[in-house]
Length: 168
Length: 154
Image 1: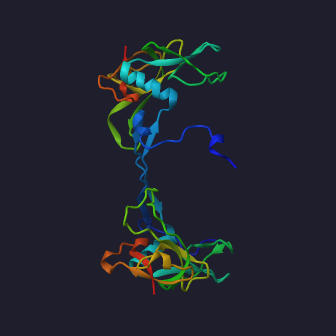
Image 2: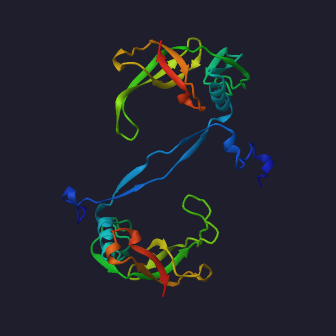
């Protein structure tokens, strides 16, 4: 096993960066990602408060999020299928850091990202979202959860039109 | 096999807009720190010399890139240079247009390996020529960065 002795260099301590010259830069990284046919419809349906998937008539899988091409059968997918807004926790995490890895503040609730297997879609088909209205220690894999939607007039056609999933 | 559904009108296209908020804090390294500190505190350009290869590197480097020797001999280099190469830039990195075109020049100094890339000021882009002499000057207020250096036609 590597020990500290084997690793050359000196680890940075807080304040070290203030002792040296530095160059600060913030690149302007804007993107405009083409939704394509499937995700465009998926987002439009989220605005209506519905979750839509797509079915492949060869393998009979109902896929969510919808896609135009079945990666197993190597053929275009067929029917649009509405699925439920309920599901089961496939996996989850309790995160005490923000997306940029900065620690959450004292008293700030942890983020609860989870993959939700959506009812009505094929087994293993799910979406990454957040859990809410739940005590972190009580989250279990397989737990039944339901989408909590934003009110109609606040939905914009985004995955955040679902605020989070809560146990039911 | 063709797709069964397709977008046929470009006004039906939708996209997801977003921004990747990245900021970085670059440190110049051991030789770079000393190089920029000399510019900031003493308004002079420093190079490092490899005695084996008889090469003076600018900006100063820690190691000779030919023989890998550690370079410990620091010396001040001349501020009289010449244009080795240049480009005229009309746009910012984000694609927006400059008010005035910028001349970005790679300035070399006789007998020195490397050089300085910076904006060449006080010049009409049409008058710039390769080989043209350039003065390397320093700003009055210096922060310890590349823009402490001013390139001006000599």
